[in-house]
Length: 395
Image (cartoon, rainbow, N blue to C red; front, side, top):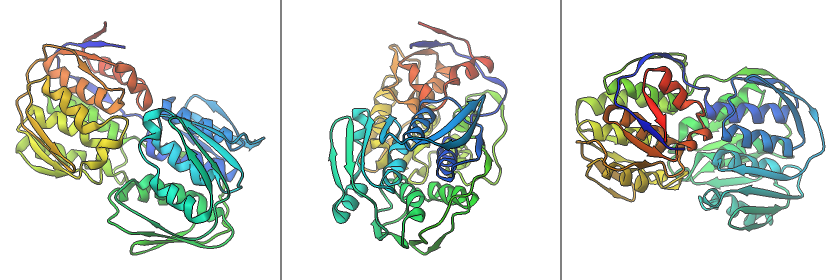
């Protein structure tokens, strides 16, 4: 899907979609409890992937509007279809090993190439068989309680997967974080959700202490609004719009809530900004830096292993707008001074790139290819832009 966006200033009032981070975790918690419900689940590709894997675990549910209600257990299939969702894949791998046996995880080649080193090290130490191919991971074995050493500067999703599974094992476990925990906010969300299901986990400095033989208790939950998607909507105000973005939890644990303070800094100077705790804000921050006075971003290395290489691919598209930039392993420096593109932009099959570039084009005008990527997390993004008065057409 290609869309031509005309210059315009967005105006109106809008609520961002529910938090994908919370929804993933709440759905898994209900599945492990065998009951309860989650309201505020949108039909994005990532949510469909997680629900598909929940079915593979043998959990039945019904969907009515945005509410998922869990009913009973059914036969388990052990074939997990994760599509392009890194959260789904990394959350379900240790969960699938609670009962043991053979499991097959399927995903895109890009997803499988993003790395599973934390888990393969655990597999090696516990004698769990595994074979990783281009679009499939085969594992066979049973996860045992243990002392797990996990790097904190790769992805918090590995830690979350273990935190979901370990309370259900026979015996107590610990997770020792061996480096700085860069995405601590996502782990805080996991601990918050686990506590709602009655799971107790203690933290002492860099170590999580998990009692075994715990039980998930069913509960009914509502997903709060998503801060990372709110950033795309609020960025329209930086470009001269008048958009009231409502529905965010003022006391939210979502690390992406810091986008508001980052935007202020981008608008009023040429700052240095650390994205290590909020990598999903990278594309929209790069876009806004290019529109204003530029910025230097550090803590960017994990942007390279997302749905696309968000450093290389975003800078490739900004270059089409006349933006000068340079990047190293963990740093990106962007100069301001965008201009109207003379050629279409490309979304690189990455929902966050498509949304960031589309927001930028509301101030410049232009065309973007590959817009269907927004279905991964925000399927009605362009409908919302239109609702806010942005004129666009499919080409």
